[in-house]
Length: 366
Image (cartoon, rainbow, N blue to C red):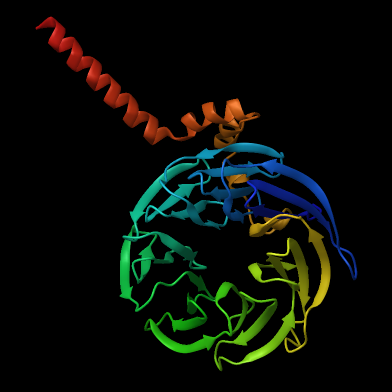
């Protein structure tokens, strides 16, 4: 199966852009594939696995898109407040965080909310899932860093920090993690949850991505992107990426190469190829796309990845066929199907209605 790349970008103007990327030897070609008026407010976050793209917004909803069939798959309604973070774990789960302080664990087979954590007394600013899928980290506006046991569905550890952190991220091997507070990134070791080093950036940090277990890409309120060594905390590479501040970074692997995607307030999205053998060298620019929009979030959807990993739809064909029958084909269908996928909510509502009818019946007979 040929691998497909789709660059998905969200903006303040409530639009989700899709650009189909054609990898070539030197320069890549990105052509406009779709524009979708995804939400009734600005988009705040986007995430992708090998089947779906999920978008969160200030309108308090999470929209799910089936990228293989190019259709809206449904809407997730559980949070009150802006959706601040979304992260898939493989083909099985999606974690969401919001201004209401909740973290929700969604099953991607039936799109039911399996577990809700009251994560922070303020908003959830960022979350990250451990590579094993057994733990998650979150930071919020209550000046705490929290560890969640996803296997047992409970809080595992709470660490008070002096300031509000706004980004947290695991390293690829899961042995360390970075916590960002304004213009610095504290690197922690999982073994003893202690800080092993602090990276200082010239400007406020807007986004980070681990390139390797020891190399961290950092973007801030400036035009440059920097690569830092987490062991020495020294900058090993710095290059000008945009004409305005860099808003978001995203990384992915493609045919053995590490690709960095950067989006900026200048409206451009760019893809960079890193030379992993010589990270001191500035990466080469593969392609750039002008959206003429105020960008807020970026991700990349890849097909063909599932060739290496058995997807949930292949594992449970009967369940998938039932879900496929429910898939929304229009906005009107989306509302109806959402009521079906929100099974626990509907059941609770029905029980309450039946209870009220029974009570009225008893009163009238009396």
